[in-house]
Length: 141
Image 1 (cartoon, one colour):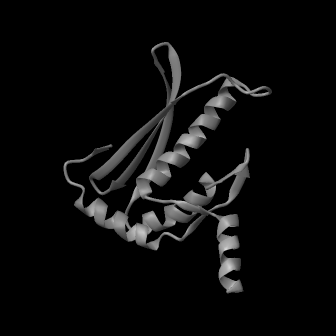
Image 2 (cartoon, rainbow, N blue to C red; image 1 turned 90 degrees about the vertical axis):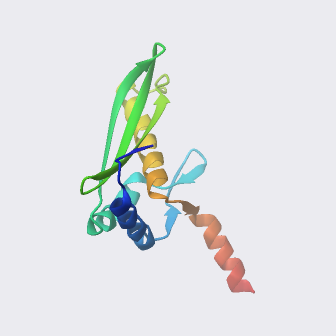
């Protein structure tokens, strides 16, 4: 993680934002697991970050390392002249059957954007089905 020389105002604004974030539940299912959806996360956090003076930017690109293509995603938080950034990278594998290289790149970038965003914002999401089962158990007592 990289950051500007001073991040005090950014950290205060981030702490206020985190206190306002709703409870997240894993709202999408694929390949036998549930996960937080990028669109759902962004729709909830961007207004809160903005109201606390934080801008969030994500960008991705391709890079070749040891003759292997990687997808890199940079996530940046800005508050005035203070900033914080983190980079995640993952190798670009062979496209799945019926997919193209650009589709594979987009898929990897989407995963990385989601993982990077929840990490830098301190978000976690419970499993909706497990939480509903636990609520049922509590109500049965």
